[in-house]
Amino acid sequence: MAYFNHAFVKSFYTDRLMNNTAKKTQHLAIDGVATSRLGGLFKSTDYSNIDNTTTLNAYAAANSKNKFLIATQSGRGSNLTGAAASTGFQIHGGYDESIKSKDIQMNFINALGAATSAVGAGQTYEVMAFGGASSTSCWPCGTDPMLRVDLKGSDALRMLGHNAYRQVDIGGVCNCCGDDGDYIHPHKAMAMLAKNLSDDPIISPLINTEDTGVGTTAYFATTTDGGSTWTQVALADLDTVACGATWDANTGAVIRIKPGVVDTQWGNCSWNPTDYTNYEPLLAKAEFLDESGNSCDICKATHHELGATTWNNGAPLTLGQFYYNGDGTTAGALSGVAPAHVVGGGDNVFKDLILSDSYMQNKYSFGAKDSSRFREVEGADTIFAPTLADRHSYMYKMYFLTHSVPRFNNPTGVFDNDQYTYKIYVPERQNIAAGTLIPNTSYAAPNDGTGTGVRPTDGNGGTAADSWDNMWVQIATNSGIAQTTI
Image 1 (tube, rainbow, N blue to C red):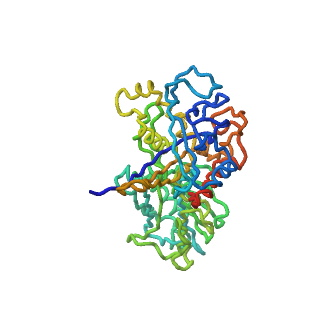
Image 2: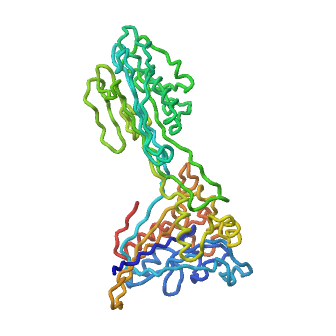
Image 3: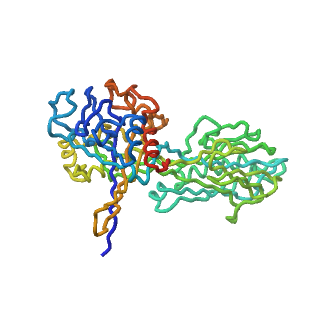
């Protein structure tokens, strides 16, 4: 029979990282100024607060085997009323009396770190084409240039069952061949490719082709000065792009492929932990092709691909140039945007906390026809101090540590090094669209009984030495473990 070490994960939440008066762990529900607190770090000897790095260092430095507690009350907002606020606790009963704490020994910490939240960004992939001298271009008259576009990611897979890809052409346009009739005007060819891409039933639902009114960020824009200035052409006007009789190497056009999908999101009253939430941006890539479906290589093509070194195909500049820009690199590419995953999104944090709470038999009822009634009577709709609306109002930083507890007196040797990972979630950003950072010192209330709010924006922030970031650095120092930051 095989035996496996036990691995346990517990998630905590707090929106004030230290209480502002010394408390016992069973008194976490209400502090001395009648302000709700959700937990913090405590000495294991007298359960008083570890409220700054000085306290933590003095407490642990004398003996590396010293311990501290991570503690929190239940995430549920329900409680029985009637206690005097000055006593620091509620009368018996209610979820606020359910305290969960973990005893951490410094010398048994074997990993710790922090994961900073990050605002997501959709990609903008630029495809540019410039003419050559004396009304030349990369497209001879009588040909039918094509553009292949690939979109990869969860949204494409969910919609189509496979990644999205499409080839669009210019529709056989051959009436913009300039005075000499040899080459197609780059403005006209690019406008037709942009129009047919926006009309495509597969690709168009996955990209943003809205007019922006700004040439440097528009879906389609043209230039006559080599890209110093751009003029937006509205989607409705692509058919009417003029066919110039002459042009030069400064004449060009850009198509900006901006993948983006608006997923269905349930409101707070019907939200379930099983609801799908996608934090993965779509990835775009494009390439010009000739009529045979091969890469068009008669022009110099410069690639600024995502995460790669800039490179080109070595072709001459005689007929013109192509640019492919996937990450905002300069040198001919103006406003590409590299995609970025959301980190610390509220949906994932809430689901993790609900799962962790379930291990304490505080189940979040969902899926049954009367689940909403159960949640109302159990006070579970709140989940914890932030409401469900905070899934979309805040982003969260995660601190974590892994604690291994040897069982020295276990004669069988079975489960001799159980591992426990603890995660603490903290609001780090407000106004997700703008990604406004909350100063880390806002979480450390002065230890003088003046704290008045439960949100980190109440204006009673502490000093840098009192911040959770610095306290975590101090724990790393005292435990001798290098901190991992993400």
